Length: 188
Image (tube, rainbow, N blue to C red; front, side):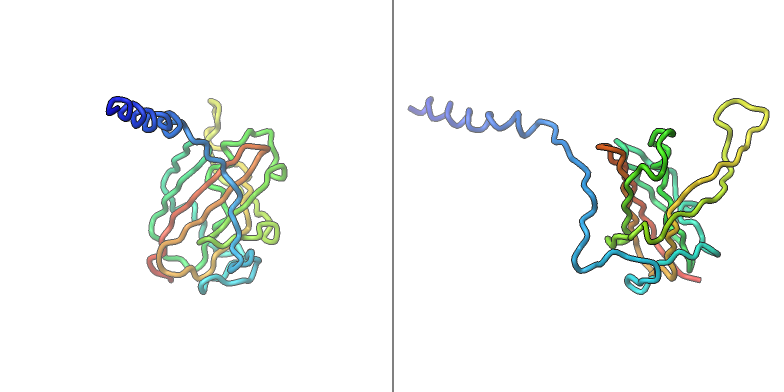
């Protein structure tokens, strides 16, 4: 009887083991908008910070960030401590480079949040700027300039402390994600 009980216990323990060890698929879902936080539009404030579209004089957040880590279409970026009154935060931090070049910006579905507050990106629109880059192929002209499209989202008077910028874009069933961690140490 004792032997039969040991076999039953062993089967009960080992049966779910392959299921527990199997790879779980994690599907990226759109950020869920909290009822407490309406979607941000230009001119609104979150925790004392103004979110707007005024790019003039805005310091680009992405220029103070370390190189990115990309794993399975997810980019994580850590930025140096900042001390600026006006930060341009609408850059998708390398996600566009992961998407086939034949895909237009307008074909993608976009979503972005700062500190858990969803941003109404369509209300902010986009901004194009010229960025110096190196030629992809060997060429007598090493530097080239390319036009870069970003969301025209600016954070004015960012509060002291840690902040998180999260974004997602979808191309069909494929999701591309970026997460940016930055700290405001002081403001000018």
